[in-house]
Image (cartoon, rainbow, N blue to C red; front, side, top):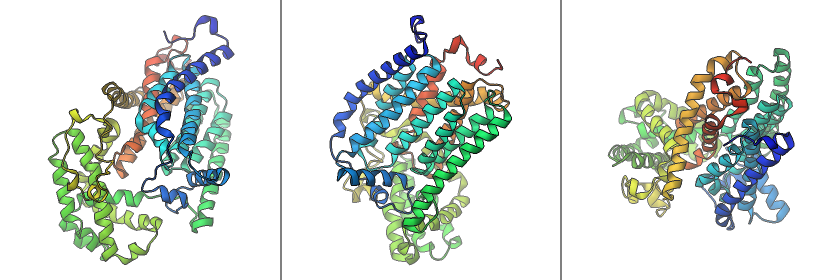
Length: 483
């Protein structure tokens, strides 16, 4: 039984019961997670860019870490701080989600299933922007659930603030800034004039936050922008489809470097095409995109493209974006195949497949990036999860994505015609942002586990909403009809 017991119908009692359930679920998962987080923070390839407030990275995460270092004299306990940051926002979101559904199971299940994914809690151990991003997004989700439950537009203004902070942490957070405005536009409880007024206020809040972030980047790097690395990300996919016939059409400065990658690109495509199973092909493609841009293309540009070698990371991204697009335009079908496989990686988590369920596409030494890293090659590595955890995580990912598609198809017409209930409006836009994010991630990035860490809780939430929605006994049909 998922409903709140009759003897706990008062609002304060409901809140207390849901909060206790969520805290209990968090405590169980914390005991499972915390032993891994007592070591010093781990560095990744882009960690130094966040710490140096580089122009190609949004600045908020660097500000947070440098503030902790200044206040406490170091970042020895950064992993614990980051886990607490993620946990506090996740618990708040779970409580609001449980109250919205009127279910004592919804909140604990969100926490348990989310933290069961090792990528979500392992990210706290690294100097990476995800923990601050998760904090902002989960807080925003909690405020959206509160708005759907109470109908107070002030919650959406605050949500606009935290979603803008997310965009100032990771550029992908900009997608969530759509949600408060979309809810104001489609929620039938808000009249047209109040919707415009509250929407204008929300937009002003978001713009102000982004202007502050852009001003911070301008003061340090003389660039009035948030920062992006999209060009460097996309070049890996583009070079993977490049052919000898492309060289003559490329800019003279870039042509020698691209030509230097062609043989390795052909080899990487061969490895992917002849992988023994789906998961190994996915892992091989992730590593192939890495190999082509680092080290093969990077070493070639150091020798043959002085302007790119002299540029900083942000300028490289600007210079490589048009180059990548020009190659992709010549091979749209090949690029679409790569995009589709990367989209599948974001749902099927090939790094989580146990060793007995998938083979290696090729020895590690076949990949230059892995050989250079002395086999520390996270694109090819296995987590080897305990089989029930592996099945739950991948099952929840696929089922949640399917639930999102169902919600989009079922709720689109009533939501867009302002005839849907608040929950249907919320989760329709939730599903739209999820699938738009999947498509955009796959278009620019390989399907690394780290890019699924925020999408996975969204999939879990959509799945649980369809499974546990019991507001006054209404079905999904009732939720999408005018009261």
